[in-house]
Image (cartoon, rainbow, N blue to C red):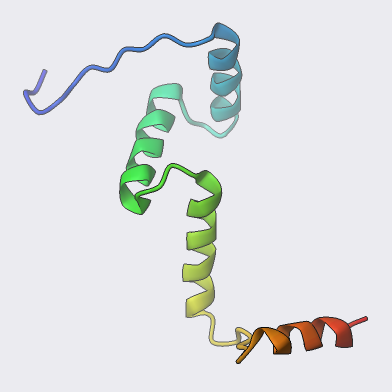
Length: 85
């Protein structure tokens, strides 16, 4: 094993492990790869919250959209919402 590598070992609830394994395998992944990917996301975004990561990705996508709606105030957002009713 390379000297810059570590072996991780932990104990967890068997049902939780099996459920997680079932979910990730449906997406063509495995447990180890999913955990490593999660760790990389935490490092990249400096936050462990998956919802936050998705929100950041959504904002990055919206910033690139030349047709996005832009508002000058929260009042404008509320006006548009009430106009749609």
